[in-house]
Amino acid sequence: MGAPRAKNIVFGGMVVLVAVFLVYAFLPEPIAVDSAAVERGDMRITISDDGKTRVHELYVVSAPVAGRLLRLDPEVGDRVEAKKSLLAVMLPTDPGFLDERRAQEAVAAVRAAEAALGHANSEVVRAEAEVEYAQAEIDRTRSLVKTNTASPAALDRAKLAFKTATAQLETARSSVRMRAADVEVARAALIKPDAESGAAGGVIRIMAPIDGVVLTLNHESEGVVAAGAPLLELGDPADIEIVADFLSHQAVKVEAGARVYIEGWGGETLPGTVRRVEPKGFTKVSALGVEEQRVNIIIDFDGVDAETLARIGHGFRVEPRIVLWQQSGVLKVPTSALFRHGPDWAVFQIVDAKALHTTVQLGRMNDESAEVLSGLSEGDQVVLHPAESLREGVRVKKRQN
Image (cartoon, rainbow, N blue to C red; front, side, top):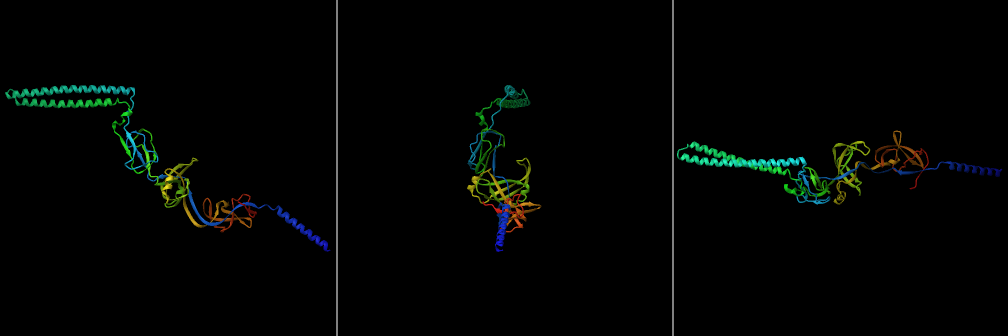
């Protein structure tokens, strides 16, 4: 009896081993997943957008009058001194060309003016003759008065006639001067454009209004400019600020004095501070053709050395990141572990090498992590980027990096 019983025991053990082997052989393989731990640390909420640097006090030097501007000598980057450095030289503009009709009209005007001058000279000759006759009449009347042949009243009339003739002579001479000026005016209309005669009306020298650096040349080459035309821009590159336009619904969350991290300029992250949120918004069309309401936010560099500011310069692109909220010791979970489960947020927590579906309550959230209010504890392991095939209770294993 003992031998068959032992044989049965051995056979039964083999059956159990085969069954166990078959069970484990047909069990699904654990899913390899990326994982991360729930931890406490610093967390901040920020907003960012493109911005550019600009000189805090920008001076635009303009043409004081219309005229011909000589080629500007200063180059971009040159340093200038107030009231000492010559920026530009302006000359009067040359006269314009005359077409055939206007040229003939100008020649005819000269002839008319010369004829009027000749007539005025004739009037002077006539007036001089009348003065001589009046003087002779006075002499004759005075002689007759002495012999009582003429009355004193006759002498007075002769003197009056002399004064009248003298006045007419002065009038005729004034008319000659006026007609001579008319001839000069008429001849001036015939002056042709001549680059060599441009300085006849004077020269204007424009000096630097401030100590600074030439930032922009708006009109480098020689040419005719209108009054008020911008010629060049001056400023101090060491005194720069940042202007960045944010969406209006983001700008309302920003307050003056907020911390700023300045990135994207080509170097290490620099500190900054919000100085002002402008009170007026504007409409800007995005690259996709969508109209957006934007608001300019002015940002100052905070404690950045002059050498670094000189490297950035005026008009450089930057990416300011404005801090809206930050706190230390926040329990946080990576946002890549989160997914929606109905109206709630959820994660797959790794417990005993199995995925456990866990609903969590979140607070603030940024691009990298979310604040955990309940549902997870510090040190808990969660699955990152959970796949659609991942279900409650499925065995998982951490993927080796």
